Image 1 (cartoon, rainbow, N blue to C red):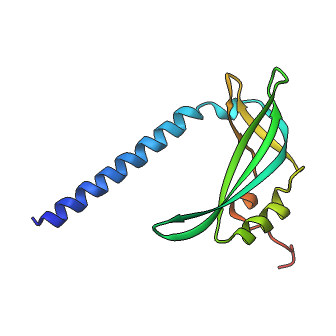
Image 2 (cartoon, one colour):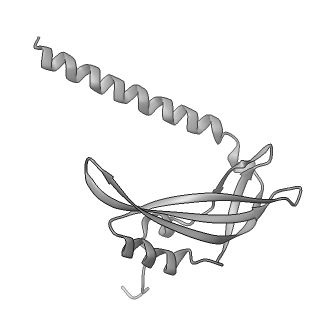
Image 3 (cartoon, rainbow, N blue to C red):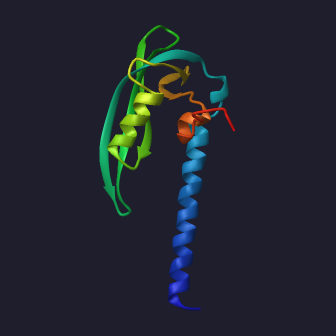
Length: 134
């Protein structure tokens, strides 16, 4: 058995373990989230930043939203989506999540800092049909 094979095996096992840890943590944090309260919120800001990594450059759009928790306290949260360019991010924001748009927010009633937008699949995939004519 070559040392290259052994090294690759260790790398794959390490990646699998890290993926499992992230998955378990996500499930733990969002356990029971289907029963969390859902309230209306509003998109209040957009921050687009260029990110440079080993694969090149991309733009990360951070959407800021505000909502009221069960006690009526004003809270905020963020949602991120990556794009190939700043222009693509701004086009998406203007079309799907412009500032002032009403959105649906689901939050943990025990800790409203744990929250997320309830978005349809088209918003996540940027694949909304422009026409229903087939």
